[in-house]
Image 1 (cartoon, rainbow, N blue to C red):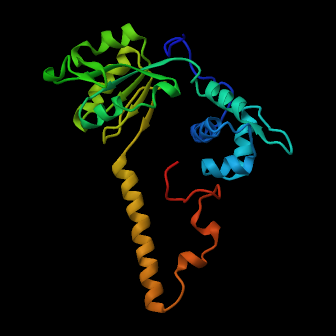
Image 2 (cartoon, helix red, strand yellow):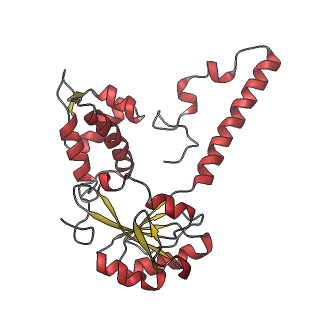
Length: 255
C-alpha cells in the first residue's frame, strides 16, 4: 500500500478551492453514515442538510470533482464516498506520528477513527524519559531523541503536535527538517513553517470563546426582549443578517 511519502492528494493540481477542500470531509462523513445504512442514492438537498451547507454550494463543490448527479435520482452514495476519499488522499495509507503524549496526546492515540479514514498511527513520541516504552493505545511510546529516525523509518509526512505551547515550535522545526510536510497543531500557539509545509491548527479554547460570544449575545437579546415586553430580536431577524458572504455561515465563525 502506498504511503504519504510517495503520494500526495491531487486537489491543488486540479484547481479545487481550499474552501471546497475544507468541506469535503463534511460530505464524506455524511455520505459514510448513509452508506452504513445502505442508502443507495441521495439528493443534493438531503446531503447538504446532513453536511450543514446549502444545496447550491454543495452542487458547486461537486462540480469541481466532475460529479453532477442524475436529475430525479440524485447522487450515487458509494461512488461519491470513493470519489471524495480519492480526492482527499484517503484511498492510501497515511502514517502519522503524534508528538506529546500527555492527556490530549493519549486521547488522540486512543481515537478509533483514524484507521477507518486512511490514517495509521505509526508512532507516539514524548520527551519524558519516564514515558519511553510505556504502551498507549497498544503502541509503545518512543523518546523524542529518536524523532528523526522514527519519521524516516516509517515514511511519515503528517505529524500531530500535542505538546505544551513552549515546546511546539522546536518540535515543529524538527518534524519539518526530518521530512514532515503537513502538521496538525493542537498546541495553543502559532507555528512558523517554511513554504510548502501545511499547518492546520485546532484550538479548543478559541472555539469555546466563540460559543461564549454567541451565548452572551443570546442572553443580551433575551434581556432586551424581556425589558421591552416584545419578541427577541433573534426571532424576527432576517436569516441573512447573521450570515457571512456565503449565506450559510455566521460571519464570526472561522472557516
